[in-house]
Image (cartoon, rainbow, N blue to C red):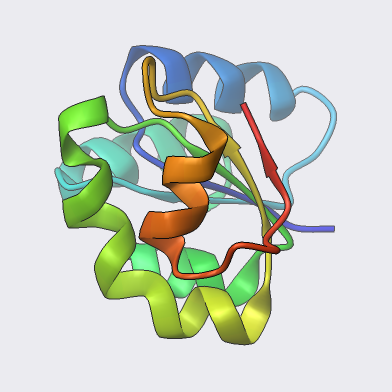
Length: 112
């Protein structure tokens, strides 16, 4: 299984660091590409963009700020529908129903 992280800030970065102790099958993405590349180098994992993460990973951690949820998820709808990853949301105040709505799939597996 490949794990993806969209958002490599405090929460996403901390979970990626902990996970990297048991697997290197991790793919990172962040709006700040340099941040993702630096963390990927530190952990010995790969990085890419949001579309690549969704297309390659079975489980994706969403570590973006809640106000960025729509901006991040809406452009990924087609890829999410095709791949159907499990989304794990770390976005405070964004309900599971809202994540599913923004992802464009009411039957999508979402964990909060």
